[in-house]
Length: 145
Image (cartoon, rainbow, N blue to C red; front, side):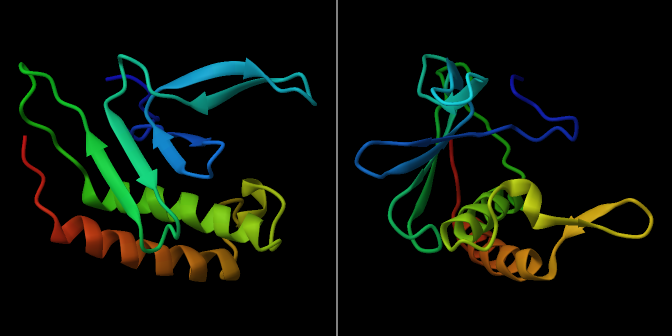
């Protein structure tokens, strides 16, 4: 499977349309950032795209998951915990940046005395709210192939 993280989760890439619709895709395009000149990845639909999360308006109310399957691939497995966690992390990050609580994703984390990174208290509270919301939505839907 493509774009797997070390933990086996599917990496999703963010995209915002000119109209403001927000998406997460499992496929991406690369481009050169116009200010920093660094190579960047942005979510994009391609022939290989399988997972699309559309966030329409308020992410806590209007998110939709689409999974493309081919004729030979009729069964999919979705890890509800991992999906809810990934969506909640992204929602918390975008909320905190949008509200000016942090400047970037790295600011969500604090290091404990043993060198482990954990969410800050504020990030944990926001993440938990989003996680509960997404987990309830995911658990209440049956996905069939």
